[in-house]
Amino acid sequence: MDSLGALGAFVQAADANGFTEAGRKLGVSPSAVSKAVQRLEERLGVRLFHRSTRSITLTPEGAVFLERCRRILCEVEAAETELTQAQSAPQGKLRISLPSIGILFMPRLAEFKRLYPQIEIEMDFSDRLVDVIEEGFDAVIRTGAQADSRLMVRKLGFYRKVIVGSPAYLKQAGLPASPEDLAGHACLIYRYPSTGKLDRWLLRRDGEAIDVALPASMVMNTLEPQICLAEQGLGLACIPDMAVRRQLEDGSLISVLDDYMQTRTTLRVLWPSSRHLSPKLRAFVDFAANKLLEPILWQGRLPIG
Image 1 (tube, rainbow, N blue to C red):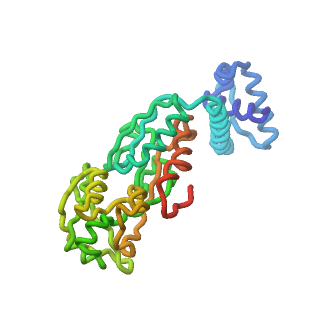
Image 2 (tube, helix red, strand yellow):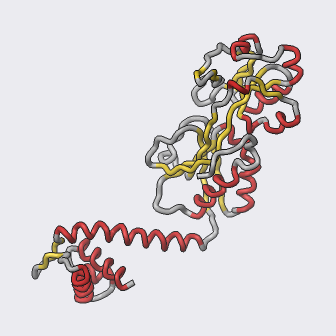
Image 3 (cartoon, rainbow, N blue to C red):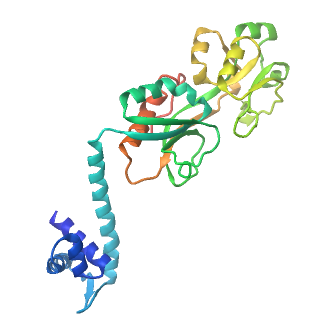
């Protein structure tokens, strides 16, 4: 602790360009600051300041040492803040943005709210690429790679899309044996609300993408109607596997062309880069990484990281 005190005296003296102002900020006499710096110089065996009767200036060695000292003191401050915050219950407003498939996470988010009743949660559902910092979000959950260097990221898991239809529809229309067969089927297509673009069904053969012109029997911009209409036998839909887990298990929907639908999509949680997380944000990030997808993913998962 004496060493940390000497480092603090040195940094204050460098910032104030003198021992008098440094002593005032530290609540000690100028001579006490001067002696602390002198002892530090003696221990290091280098001169940190050029001294005159009116001012002090850093030596080249002192300038290099100053940057190191700043980092050390910042880490100590961050550690103290982290420990202090750990003692307080997470609370306050938490603004999060989720993709449209985020509706599937509601049971888990309800569990999060029960665990942390003092956190006020505000949710935004959108497939657009939000500006996390400019729009004031605490965290967002998104698919795809992270390109914003201002953000921290943690991997949650993955899902893949499946093409599904009801037993009645497949009995009437026949099972598609290859991607090209989709041209003869009624397709229930998702339209992205943010861009107006139709969802592409990512079919691949031997690693190469297969571009099939899909007959759009019905188009919609939310997930639930796709599932409902597919269950009603009105066509095939391309749905995240985690959205139709129950239907695939009870047989109300059957997946087809699985060998051509192996592309996996990664889900991540992102938040503004910071030296230390607030308790509410730390609670959410940890919960999302460990719990958010736990009851949903059913065909394996990526390691948490």
